[in-house]
Amino acid sequence: MRKHIVAGNWKLNNNLNQTETLISELKQQTKTSDAEVMIAPTFVNLWHAFQATKQDDIEVISQNMHFAENGAYTGEISADMLKSIGIQTVILGHSERRAYFNETDESLAKKVDAALVNNMRVIFCFGEELADRKAGKEASVVESQIKNALFHLEPSAFKHIVLAYEPVWAIGTGETASPEQAQDMHAFIRKTLATKYGNAIADDMTILYGGSVKPGNAKEIFSKPDVDGGLIGGAALKAEDFYAIVNAF
Ligand code: 13P
Image (tube, rainbow, N blue to C red):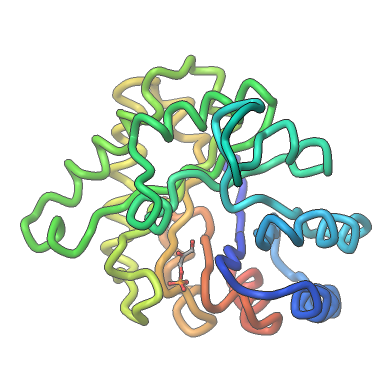
């Protein structure tokens, strides 16, 4: 049985006070679905968020990390540092990291390896840009992003990986992929995985959709058979909206 996951990517939002407030509002919400709930505050607030949610059904995860264990990488954070404060899951490959911070398939493959060596779980993001979709290249772009960063891994590694399809044109734009577009791509991703690693691994893979998921459209998107959850940006910053999405399963 695949896991359902709804993860809130807070991006560059919420200082310490705002983090405290949002977490206390999240704790007042009621979960009625079987989805695992995760939140990804910014690095400086991870420790506080982890402490504040220890007793709750909320996992605090990181938005990023560096591939090196330590060394001369000013401003960076390692897997070991994250683990030392209790963080067990990291988002890697978000399109904003690729676009604004020059993350490449090659550097992402190294980050994935570093996370796995440290027994962390990875939420690996990918997705095509609008120009790719207009050119009918969305499947080949997604396929190469997955292959380049993940297909060097042993089959056993996939137990620790969650995939997140986030079409760039749907992120923060209010324009969401239609449930059919999401389903078509998720089925393609599963098939790509099956071709290399077999049906058992592909069938077990949790594949999240991200891009303008809101309380009003979550149910329809999550009703698709290959959509196993969501990676939520804007709507994760309001406790009620976020839990309306969590409870859309
Ligand atoms: P929005 O939900 O704001 O479109 O952001 C999606 C996203 O990038 C989650 O990682």
